[in-house]
Image (cartoon, rainbow, N blue to C red; front, side, top):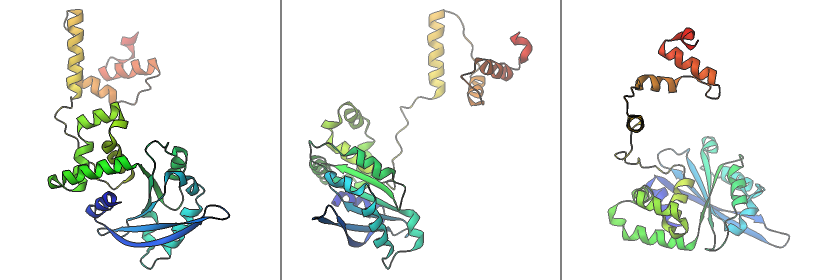
Length: 256
């Protein structure tokens, strides 16, 4: 898939090799999977193996035999080094039809399997791919593939629409799935200009109390912050009171 390969290229991964792995579907049928090997040019112990596997065939990977064979073949390649084994991830690119239910059960079992590689199943449909590809083409003058995806998923307006109804947001669905499955994808730091501080919320709550009770309320904010940082069992009322009194220096006598 061009989008994924573009992302890998921008993240300094080089398509090093491709080799076939055959596995048995049933007594009469077998299937060959082509394994793409992408190696980081900045750290050649960092490797991604990438394969295509339709959603309907994910269940064939659950028993791990196909993945085991991939690992065996990969370790026989002339460029393989021992340092790669603990730094190799398998990305399974899994296409599904628009109205087809994703095989979530197989997906979870594959990703939770601890053997051979860290495994990620990237699920997508043709509508998501086509819309994402067209959007990237239309905006290619604005930045790289990685930077454009970063801008798209950190756009608060687009996220709000996706959260409200992700079915109507195929581009966001495609990009967020891709970012989630590529652990090397650099996340853009969200803008913080609209993020309120703890002091802001505390002062806001105090203002509400003052208005409601019509009297002065003084709170030692430093003591409150120190109290929150203490090792306290908040399910034990006595412990909470003892720690608060200790913080204020009142001691046990004041509690009596």
